[in-house]
Amino acid sequence: MTNLNTIKKIALKNKAVKKAYDEMALEFSIIDQIIKKRIKKGMSQKDLALKMGTKQPSIARFESGYYNPTISFLKKVSKALDSKLEIKI
Image: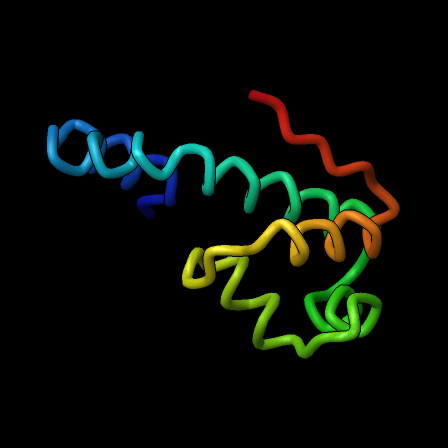
């Protein structure tokens, strides 16, 4: 059975795919960190949404990469996950 990492490795051999992936690296990193933190805290998407005062579909859209979050959204996420939001340049 082929897993996601194998598919990703094969896809990233394509220069166009690699370029697009690299351009989205920051977004993927933010999403990955939030999903890992949510799971570590034993929270479902619905739990996180309730704590943020929003609905589960907005969390699903964010986690799937279909929603480009605002700073306000990220602040709500970090507060709901009892985490500190840091943005560095």
